Length: 162
Image (cartoon, rainbow, N blue to C red):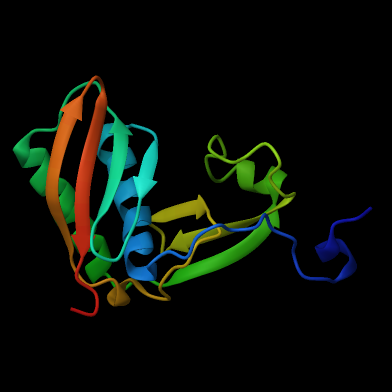
């Protein structure tokens, strides 16, 4: 049976099981792209994104220095301040594989993916909620971090609407 978009229907996506706080979820995309650029690591291994505070885990060979932590915060805020549009594009799984990392997708992923772009800074397969422009994120602040057995956990928050 052909995919619905091949017959003019709406794309069929996997169901989503949570309702993210859009400013924080968009900041997570920017944080992930920043970590990949600074450390060459994969996007977060684990993420818990909420309105009050969020956390992400990254697999790193050593704990970032305090200077690097400050630089992560500075870079994320610099990207937010660029007032980048956040856009959504639907594409085939095959086409998406040439653009984004699909290693964290479930086995039963749909054949059509929703790619979320934060300007020219990040592209990611995602079905969550996002702002329309990074100007809606507010500021990004790192609250705390710790390192254990190759896992760096970063706790952070955004100040949108405060």
